[in-house]
Image 1 (cartoon, one colour):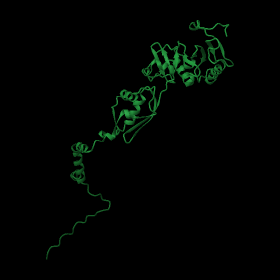
Image 2 (image 1 turned 90 degrees about the vertical axis):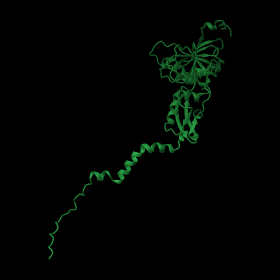
Image 3 (image 1 turned 180 degrees about the vertical axis):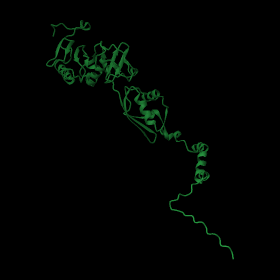
Image 4 (image 1 turned 30 degrees about the vertical axis):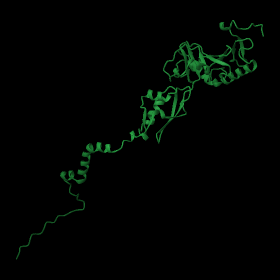
Length: 317
């Protein structure tokens, strides 16, 4: 009779017992991990090859355009220089061709145009297909030419200097001239002149606008500034007429100085004078005319050696 084997030991397994943990070898040599490691190792080798297989769209003609073909809204017209767009490109040191796929292209173009002294602000730059970059911007306006010993300097309504090389002495007949300025610009074109008299005269020239010829005016005469604390609102301005009369205007438009007439009232007095007399030097001028009083316009003969020989006798009509 065969012997009976001893009973097998009973191993009690509970539901809460954790599964056995894999060894380090088992963890390292899993198939997924091995595949991922292999792919990572191949990136330095395959990456350049893959890049070479992808076509470089930045060099394709449909994804490039000449800088000079940038569309400006509104277009640049006189007195801006004919090579305005090329000046923008050179000043910003941008390439002659624009890569349209460059994500920073709108910012680069906007920055380039905003830096030009003829540009007041850039409102929008859009990069559109096919091959079109559009720039919407506001140009600075010339309101007067400042006369100084070495020439004429154009300014905008805020008294910002504009590029003098874009003007000639012949342009003086197209703009009001500001006389009496003894300072020189503190900065380059595109920066404020830095003289409160220039700022005040610019504001007045802008207010008078294209009516200056109709009002028979030729120049704004500013006083010499002797105090560093002088503000544009402190400057008392004169107007010079075609016949040589001088009109006491007062402070710049928008002044809140007590007792100062509004600029519109002063222009109304110029209109009234011209309706009554036809010109500022009639009947026996030229005159020093004061339009600043509240209730009347006053005048007296202008004592100026330039007119002594031509002035009529007080007894003549």
